[in-house]
Amino acid sequence: MSLTGAIRENTNGDINVGPTTTLTVFAWTKRNSGSGTLVNRWGGGSGSRQFLLEVNPAVCQVAICDGAGNDVVAGATTVSTGAWHALALRKNGTGAGALQAWLDGVADGSGTSNRTVQSIGNVSQSQFRVGIRSTAGSAYDGLIAHAA
Image 1 (cartoon, rainbow, N blue to C red):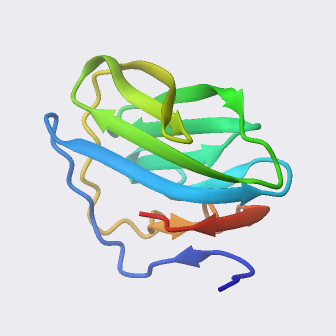
Image 2: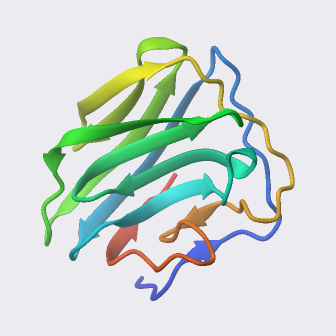
Image 3: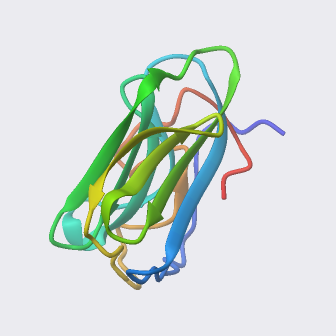
């Protein structure tokens, strides 16, 4: 199945992730060019952000937010164009290595994170999205499969 554009949900369902809960966000992508968001719940400000999985500028980049700020980790390996790649965000607890960017089944970057992914409830500018970061953003240039 092929989709032109992006998917977003309208109900603004929440994702509750406590400090000891592991969050994994995953998607396959076949990138054409440039950068863009694969899967996210990432609104305009810190109060409307939870998680972000993207290719930026050409590496796997992940972020989580607790309402006071964001932790961001970028991978080291280029996500090549024209081939399928598995990208993932993993948030596991707190401290060194708690936030990780994964590429093709290998941890490609990690960083310290002491944030707990915030519960933001029904925030109008923060829908769960596949293929686009926000309503003002442009759609991802490539294919996305099995986002979870």
